[in-house]
Amino acid sequence: MTEITELGVAAIRDGVVSGAFSAREVAEAFNANVAAASQLNAFIVTTPEKALEAADKVDADRAAGKPLGKMAGVPIGMKDLFASKGVQTTAASHILEGFKPEYESTVSQKLWDAGAGMLGKLNLDQFAMGSSNETSYFGNVISPWRRNDGGNAALAPGGSSGGSSAAVAARLCPAATGTDTGGSIRQPAAFTGISGIKPTYGRCSRWGIVAFASSLDQAGPMARDVTDCAIMLESMAGFDPKDSTSLDMPVPEWSKALDANLKGKKVGIPREYRMDGTDEEILKSWDDGIAWLKDAGAEVVDVSLPHTKYALPTYYIVAPAEASSNLARYDGVRYGLRELPDGANLQDMYAATRAAGFGDEVKRRILIGTYVLSAGFYDAYYTQAQKVRTLIARDFEKAWAQCDVILAPTTPTAAFPLGDKVDDPLAMYLNDVFSVPASLAGLPAMSVPAAINADGLPLGLQIIGKAFDEQGVLNAGLAIEQRARFSAKPEKWW
Amino acid sequence: MSVTRETVAKIASLARIRMGEPELDRMVPELNGILEWVEQLGEVDCSGVEPMTAVIPQKLRLRDDVVDADPLTGGGVREEVLANAPAPEHGFFGVPKVIE
Image (cartoon, rainbow over all chains, first blue to last red):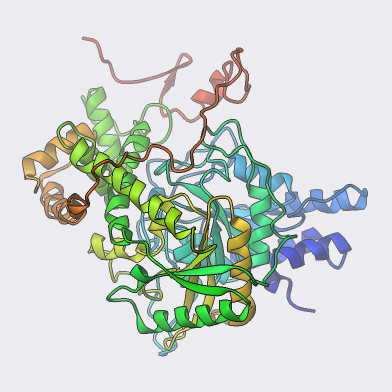
């Protein structure tokens, strides 16, 4: 029999339901892998007892003949941006170190209700701000992947969901939650050879997720294949009255309707995504992806998204502006860190607490956000950015007149070594050049592994769909998955 | 438009983040680099374009007008609210003296 930790969500759930193995056996196997992988630093805290507790409940329910959920017996990693009742929830920041929420986020509760169990809280970029997991207060996550040059250079697992991507790729968990504000599910998925989908804005409740940029933040699953992503997304999505932007729509059974036959579908290839500086091998995998989707029956058409080049600068006004407002809540009064120098007044306490509690990248973005929202600059920066955002969303609207989904690379390069871009914020930001436009337009988008490059590292392809059409995105993803036949996995060195 | 050291100090003070001289020195070129880059948005012709307010058009809901419509986010949970406070006092959030 295949080792349990090589199995994905569907295989584990089906095995538990059929009695091929118990949920406890599964939880124990993954707990052991988690415990043996501390070198990767993928988890901030581990919760083996939670995984076992959830597993025992599933086993007991099965023995009692009760119906089992969609995620029955599947232990998962939880990005440490989701509030976990009674378990430290930090957003990888010092300012929230020791914070134990009195409540559970909607998305994580839905997963527990579906029979999943928690292996631990996954490391991430601090407040989800970063593309390499190097801004965490709790240290870098090391990608399980290494180049095939025999060197041991530590590579970035991507960010901000870097703990999630590293843990899934290294078989520490069959799936993990991620959140995506400008690419934080798709870019790390691409860097580590796994799949991940950001659904339409509003599909997954934001309640109980530490807020970064509220008009962009969306939760989504990260797993080893498209089917597993579909199953897990079904368990995460759904209307929540506690989130004012939650979509009041039924959640389709995406996994049951998966269909890789794309006959009659049109796939748009945005010409503006052929940018200078994009890696040759990425362009080659894009061409392969086009051929695969044609082979699946789709018609390929050229489309234009003329405002693409403005997406990143728009994002780096809108997201910091929202962050500066959202992060104003960390004041040293209600929860989290408090720094109270001798003789300090209330204002001094705020400033000292926030100076000690936030990392450099978080401070940088709060300052940018504060500046672009300040009197006299608001219209020139923020209002202008929101207008350009309208134009970016309109580009997609026009493209949908010609196609059903869009195919593009997920990232401009494969994973880079840790430390490579850390001193150059702009170079780091450019990593999200292909993922940010869909975020600004609120559209569902996913990354699926497509190829291994000459260095032995995974490359991902991105599918962007119409609002609410997760099915179309997943179907195209499945068509690529079936043809790319990506089976590489990192060789264990940890 | 580039920011001066004084502007960055003012922004940091508005954002309630204490910054020493070396940190300000480091932030000025970094912020200028980012601002210079985002200013390319100025070249986009946005005449007649409305700024985006909602990425997916939605009608804002109102909750039921009853006390504690959702018990989880309603009242009567003082202990839970104070559970993570760094300095709770007598059932309130403790802060340094603000009135002389």
